[in-house]
Length: 409
Image (tube, rainbow, N blue to C red; front, side):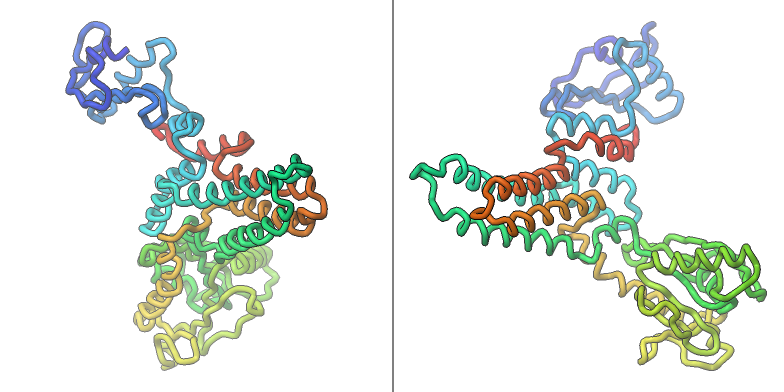
């Protein structure tokens, strides 16, 4: 194929400048041609790259020409990454990191994705799995060669502290307040309060554009509105909600219901009130900052106050910058953590929790109690870790992961 379109195949990993021609010999474009011989390629297979100019006409003509060759077809979304995985070039956590990098909106998301692509999670999880397999080998050796003198008789005493240390490490990794997932998906800040206290005005001020309709009529906002912000590298979704009150209006009542759901989903609630700091109505279920709005009308102190409340006036701008700075500071710890090895996927958390459960069961059983059951729980724990990186039976998750990627990945 290469010889018909671009002439002689270049030496592996060497760029060659060539004219690309169709079946009649007409020049389609000038391009760089590179050949990567498997297994030393991204996918582990022979790979030919044609780096042509990117005009639609050139690409359409090349796609049509390549499609005429037997066995040549457009790649499916994520197919290159899938082939790389199937050929052992990458593990599933690296593929997920690539997908996150493609979707990254902020610097923190980019850093976290690059670290994951580089193998930070793979190294951690495979290290735990290797230690588990070593413990399992020792346990099974004691079972299989119980009457032999080559295996020490105090295996249970040897295994117990190693197993307990491993369980503590995984539990500590799980107890991260979902920082990695919050960086990956972004934090959620919900604006809540009674009708007409300035939630929509604050939404527009934070977004620096008109996102929400603002009127003097209470109950103007009846549905949740969202805007995405980048606060010093942290993606934050701000949600404007309907005013919280009892109402006979069916539509507004649905808006209030959605507002209460948005409060429950939030990482942080800004509870607004006019004429003084509002009183929280959700019993500390979610971290809440009390914000007195419209201080230009009351003469109250703007900015951050000693009692932890805030005073703002969207009309004059007083206190809004202080509130923004406080929000950025609130999530700065998460941004700083983007260089750590953090959990980023609910899938990982599920399998790690399964691993911890299996280790806890193994500790309860004890090697000296039921060696066979003890070993089976260790195998279950190792399988759970292997599912994260793709070492064992993960067919059911492959499609969902690779479909997140675009055609060229």
